[in-house]
Image (cartoon, rainbow, N blue to C red; front, side):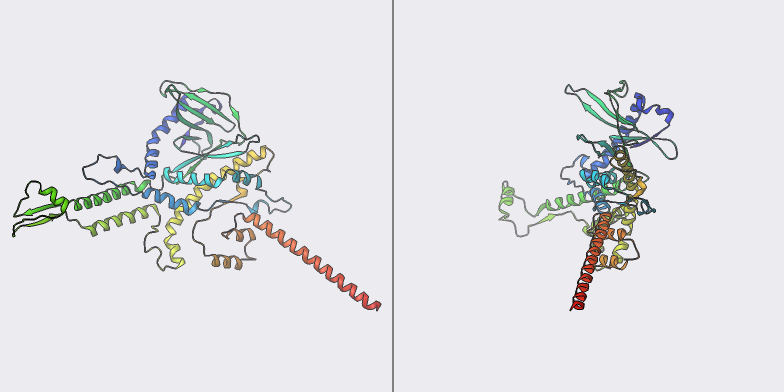
Length: 467
C-alpha cells in the first residue's frame, strides 16, 4: 500500500522512529480485511459458503472473479514484455549505440516475465502491488526482483505534488518456538536497508536488529504498481453481482434437488405397515382399490425466467469489468476481423490503461537496475527514457496479413519497428543487428566474387593478346 506523510513527521528515515513504524503497520492492518476478501474471492471462497447452511440447501460459487482477472492478464501479459533501445537515445551524430545487454541479462537470469505476471495478477486482484529490488546472494551479486503483496509492503511518499519516495517498510508477523509473536520489519531508504523488531503495537518499541546495509540502487528499492488511479481490483465493483449469481445458481440447484425429492401422495387408499419399504425397494404395489390413484406433488418454477435472469447477471458482470464473454455465441460467429476488433474495443481500452499504469513501474525498475550496474561498472549511464517498454496483446495472429503489412511498409518505417510487429521476433534490436551483419557479409561476398570475376576476365584477355 502507499501512504503519504510530511517529511517533518518522518524525521530521519535512516534512524526511523518506532512511532512512525507503528503508524504505518496500523494502516496496513486496517487494509488487510479488504485485501483478504479480494484474495478470497479470487480463490473461489465466496461469502455464500460462510453463511449458515440450511437442510437441503445447495451452495455453489461461480468464480467470475478469477475469470475477469485471468482473461485481462492473459490479454496484455500473455506474451513477454519487450525492452528495446529507443532510437532517439543513440541516433545523435557520433553517439555510440545504446547497449542493453547487461540489463537484459539480469532480466533473463531470473525469468522476469514470470515476476511481471505475478505483479499483474496481484494488481488485478487487490488493485495494487509492490516489487522489491534486492541483491542476490551469489559471490558476484546481481540485482533481482520479488513481488511483494500490498498487505505486507508499505511505500511512504511525501505529501508534495510529485510524491517523492521517502522509505518503504516490508513487514510480517512472526512467532518464536516458544509461541511469542513479534513484528519483523525491513526498512528500505534511498541508501540503506535495515531490520527492526518489535512486539505489541500498543506498548512495545521497535529496535534495530543489526547494522544498516548499503545498497546500490540509488533510490528506495521498492516499486509501487497501481491497477488504476482508484487502486481497485478488476472485479471489486462486481462483488455484489457475483454474490447475486451465486445465490441464483444455489437456489436453482436447491429447487432441482427438491424437485427430485417430490412427495408421493395416494388418494383413496392407505399403505399397510411395511409397504413403504417394499414400495421403495420393488417400485411396485399390489392390491390397490380400483378408484385409488397416486401422484407426485412437485414444486413448479419458471426455468426460462431463471435463465433470463442468470444471463442478465453474466452480461452485466462483463459490461462492468469491460471483459468479453468468450463463450458467447454472438462473440465469434462469422464476424469479420474489424467487427471482432470493435467487440474487443472496451477490453482493449481497459488493457491499455493497465499497460500504462504498469509501464511506470517497469521504467522505475529499469532506473534502479541500471544505477546498480553503472555503479558496478558493468553498464554505461542509462536513463529509463532511453528504453521502450513494448507490450504485445495476446490475440490470434493472421500471419499472412502481418507479413504482408511489414513487407509493404519497408522503406517507410524503420527496420526495428517493422521487425517488432512480427510475432516470432523476440528481440527486434538484435534482429536488426543480425540483418545488418548478414547484409554486410552478403555485400562482401559479392564484392569478392566481382573482383574474382574481373581478374579472370583480365587474365583471359592477356592470354589472347599473347597468342
